[in-house]
Length: 243
Image (cartoon, rainbow, N blue to C red; front, side, top):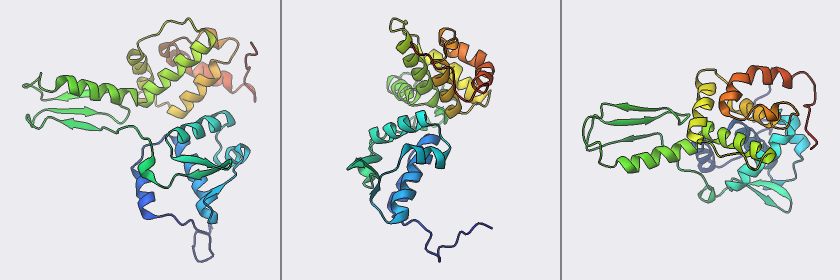
């Protein structure tokens, strides 16, 4: 039976205000797991900061090494994790966190029947009962929706694929990322693919000798996804390109 009693001294002290700020903050699965590991390795041992090796993070979270460094970089960019004398620490002053605005829905108060809903994924937009005042605030709403779309997992993963393709071919023509994101959105909503796994597949296929030349759009990524996953599992180490 798991020992979950605090009487033996095994517990982590964290201020309620900070805990509530964490609860309100939207993070990816990798970000959550690594953020809480840093909390455990610091506050869990009554420390403000600690030197935590990437190998240790890999072992304790199960996240691949290449994703660990990138995730820590994202947390640092958000100023949720900071470095003190080469040691990792939590930025406990959550007012200093650099977070994107989180918009879930916008209601047209001048028209109670008008509701503009944005899903948790942020790419499916539904209009309910909007019959009047169509022009009032339309541009602002579009800007809000566009901003939300650019912060969605589908759009972010589309950008990741584009950036990886451009690392191989800098002259690759910029696609319409909003269109690209619809294919990723379908992968998440319809195919039930996990965003973290999609990210891993994108990273792998753009470094594979064969697939980096064949996966040049999110539509192709969706079509070949199962085959990509199977190829990833054939060997313990992917066939990384050396040129």
